[in-house]
Structure formats: structure tokens, C-alpha cells
Image (tube, rainbow, N blue to C red; front, top):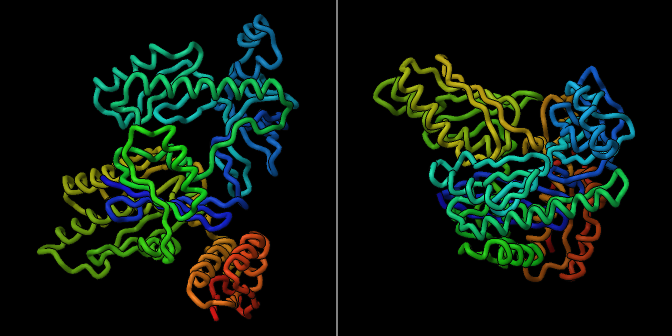
Length: 495
């Protein structure tokens, strides 16, 4: 399956689109106003320990304290900050994996962020440190060797395991990523040495600095995409920012020189995401109804702790029998539901309600089609068999909020029952349109009429970017408040 990665940068916002077989499969959005912390490693200070929940709060030096559960505590990493070797052994005998036996208020601890702070909750933390590399994932607190489940060939799994065990330092672990398949012993060893050196540096900084402090920060979105998504299936990377293009080229050359992938700087006046038809697809993320080519459709309802995907026949009238019609719609819906799960980053509990089919073998065929379509998904999922009523239940790993919740905010006009595009999301839509108008010849003034709160947001998040853009092009950019409660109700006039 060939894929293409598109990278769009608008001042302090970066968007990455992954296209597979001509369809938008994944979308990542990162803004400097909402910094990402997943993967970051901190030396934190334990705050309140809550025995009743078997968890504790950890001060990371951020706006909100992180949260660590007892199962995410690696005992030795905490004890060694305070105890001598013989005391550690004695403490182990007394503990029964209770949070109050392992952590205490004021203790300095080494933790990594597993999940972003969401819904008023602090970031989820773990003391089991993992550092992703080119071919391997380094485990700082587990003496373990693992192979990606996506590598199915048993001989290749054994080969990789033998290579890792042959070079692995004692006391740490490695997991071979999917990209490691077919790589040479030297390539695996070099990645192992790079990650081991990185870990030693983190530990050295932890010894030298007082908590709370950031010890390791994950790279920017466009570099993480190259590191995590690059495989032989990727045919090209196109970026519309010269700075991002140079960074990607440098990183790719130093880390992926063996792969032949075209990396291109996009210079056309037509915006990159418009040229490739991505903008209309992004707008559909805010819609509940998703049409299928056959005329059937999906209804996607996101609640606080549950997402329901309902499949309907819609306008579909083909098929010699009712059973055949339902089967064809369900098969198409199985693939589309999997795509929407990845694209919208639906997380937590997900229920897919297929149109009921009596034929058991047909239900199984639909279920397998859904499983196959989800194989490209990098997030972990647990999926239950399809019920006799055509219902599939699953859970999907929650690392960050769904795309809808990331790009929107509760609607103030319906008592927060629904969601509307956030002021920041609309602000970047306006900025992209301004950039599009400025690129046209003979334009000397641009007037934007929009909701007053949206204008305030633009001036707050991107005052310097717009000022610089106007100065470079010799164009005056003006804003005028518009009497409208709708954030999306704006118009732009270029003269």
C-alpha cells in the first residue's frame, strides 16, 4: 500500500496528512499554543499520594500535575533515589505493590508522559521509560527483548531477537519495530548504540538537576512523523515550509539514507492541502454523517466516554436480494469505519453497529474485512467478535484526544451538548486564506470580517506571524468585528 506524507506549516501550527491509496488516512495537528508532552521525560516531585486510588500526583513543573497509577510504577527506579542496596532488598520484602509503600510526598522520581492532559485530568505518567528509535524501542527499566507483532515471519523474528540479544547491555530492553524487518546486523546495532547513549545522557541530567525539570523532549511533529511512519511503503514526503523541509532532509539523510524516498519542497501558490484535496476532507471530520460510494452512510456520534458508529442503507438500492444489499453496504462500511477511526483518532470504547445479517458466515466475512482494514493502525486495539446482531465492540488506545475534540470546543448555544470548531481552529483557517489571497498579484489590502472573539484569538496566537507576512508582501491586513455568534462566519476581501 503506497502512501504519501504531506506537511503543511502555518506559522505556529503544523498539520501532517498521510495519504494511502489516494485517500486521507491519518491527520496530525500540532500547535505551539498547545504543546505536546507525550513521550517527554521529566524528573518530577511526588505530591499527594492517594492510597484509596492506588495512585499519586507528580509535579512536572507544568500547569497541571501528572498522575501515576501503581501499575505504572517501576519500583527500583524510585527506591534507588533514597536507599542503599541492602535497604532496597529489605524494602522489597515489606512491599506488596502498594503505592504508599513505593512513593512518598516530596520524593524525586523519573517519569515519562504516556497520555496528554485531557478533560481536566493531568497527564498520565509511567516510570517505565521507552525511547523510540529508527528500528528499535529502548526500554530503560525492563531487561526484555520483544519483536513487533506486525513482523509475522518466524525466521525473521528469531533473527532479530538473536541480533538484539547479542548486543544488548544488561538491565535494559529493546523491542524491534516493524521497520527493523530485513535490516542488517550493523543497522540494528547502530540504532541500539544511539538509544543507549541517549538514555545515559538522560540519566546523567537526572543526577545533576533538581525536580521538577524536563530531561528529554520529543522532537517536533514533522520529525516524529519521519521517525515513526517512514517505511518502504512511503513513496514521498512533501512539505510547504522551507525550514521543515531542511530539517526533514537532514534527519532523513542521517538516519534513513538506505531508503529511496522523494523529499520535496512545495512552492506552488495553490495551498498544499488544497492541491491534494485534503481541506474538504478535513472539514468532513466535523460532520456526523459520512457517505459511502454506494449511497449508504455512517453516522458517527462521539460522547464523553463512548463513540458509536452506526451503518445505514441510505440511498443504496442495488442488489438482487435484501441480504445481498445489506452485505455489500456492510463490506464497504467495514473499510470506511476503520479509516474514520484512524482519521478522527477515535479513542476509548468504540461500538460499530453494522446492519443486521442473519448469515453467520457473511457476518464473519464483514468482521474480518474490518480487522484487515485496521491493520495499518499504529494505536493498540482490543476487538470483540461481532455479535449475532451485527455489533462490534472495541477499545482503542488513548494517547491524545480525538481529532474532533482537539479542533473544537463545546457549543455555548446548546448548553455544551454539541461541538463547534474552536476559535483557534477557525483562526488558522482564516490565516491560511489570508496567505492564499496575499499570493495573488496586485493585492495591497486584505480586510477580514469575523466574530470578535475569533479576531482576538488571531491577534493573541499569531500577532508576529501576520505582521511579518504583511510586511514581506507589502500588504495591509485589517480586521473588523462582525455581528455574528458563529465562529465560522467570516469573510475576506482582497483589494
